[in-house]
Amino acid sequence: MRSHRIVTIPGDGIGPEILASALDVLADTEGRLETFHLELEEHIGGVACHERTGKPLTDESLEACRTADAVLKAPVGLPWARGADGTETGLLGGVLRNGLDLYANVRPIKLWPGVTPPIKVEAGQVDYVIVRENTEGLYLSRGRGVGNEEAMADVLLMTRKGVERIIRFAFEMAQRRNGSPSDGVRRVTCVDKSNVLRSFWFFRQIFQRIGEEYPLVEKEYLYSDAAAQALVQRPWHFDILVMENFLGDLLSDLGGGTIGGLGMCPSGNYGDRVAYFEPIHGSAPDIMGKGVANPLSQILSAAMMLEYLKEEEAAQMIQRAVWSALASGDLAIQANGQPVGGSTAATKAVLAHLGQS
Ligand code: NAD
Ligand code: IPM
Ligand code: MN
Image (tube, rainbow, N blue to C red; front, top):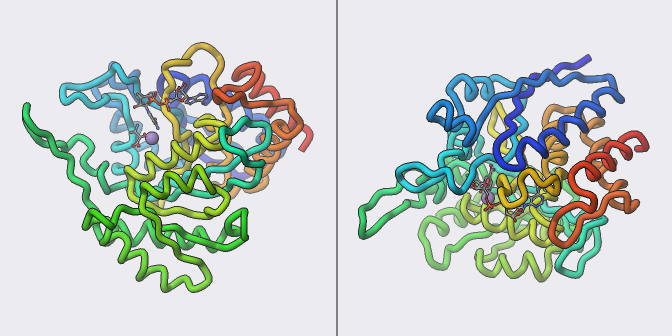
């Protein structure tokens, strides 16, 4: 029996609700397969932790994440919990991504059946991945903004090492996928703003050079404003899009809006030695405690974690269960992104289909 040590972080807002759903699905999968065991270790993080300790994650918990086989994190942060500089106190992006050097933020945007997308597309026609640089760009300025009462600056910085490694990561991933849904072409789209900013020209030049090492992958360039339109008008064209941190933050939520909402969006944050998995969305304080959140973002993040742990059979079992629960109509996602019957009904439907797949 293979064993994996997993740190879980329940987070804030809807975090504990959707993490509980994902842990139910993991436990059920483990029980059915009996080939692996997850040794779970819960660590408090986010606003709840900041209120107790003055930090969104303690040093001990960060160390536990560094030495774990993987981390399954729920959303953290509450917009009313802010520090003296005005930014939120509960966030862990800087702590985990920079603290553990997790440079690749992988955000699959996939249209599943049974959802109500705002654009006219069928399940399977949207299936691309946003590879978001995760340790520099504009967000390197987290906690470092400078200024006074009259002006304030956050610097966007790109380094050769940082850009090279994310671009290589994107091309390597393209080689492992099956290409875009519309034409099957393996394609990496470089999304930047190099018409205006030197840092993005630096990014594009490195993309061009590294792209030459991958002759079988098509390269394409889009400015980020035009990319926003294209992701709505012709999302089926895309396979992998690689971009700077802030752009990846914005465009991945835009992608989520086209496939039934953020509750359909898992993600993985990868470094060379550690990785953590979380929904791309936040703690959704507007719906916390109401039992209406879509837990699939957290459940699919757990499946991405299993893939990373090389528990492919278990990962596929969960993905198949989600697909068949949605395709059969036992689970449906409304236009507002919430599952019919709420989180409990959604979790039950996935568990029922785990038994069948
Ligand atoms: P949000 O992503 O929490 O919510 C945006 C909208 O999407 C809301 O209407 C919400 O109800 C809806 N939504 C999100 N997840 C959903 C789900 N699973 N099912 C159904 N609907 C869902 O963004 P926000 O309101 O701008 O931010 C709330 C808090 O989360 C802030 O404190 C923010 O800083 C934080 N945040 C944290 C993370 C993270 O931990 N990774 C990511 C983004 C935002
Ligand atoms: C995300 C979030 C975080 C980010 C914030 C809340 C720290 O928006 O993971 O998309 O972009 O850094
Ligand atoms: Mn975001």
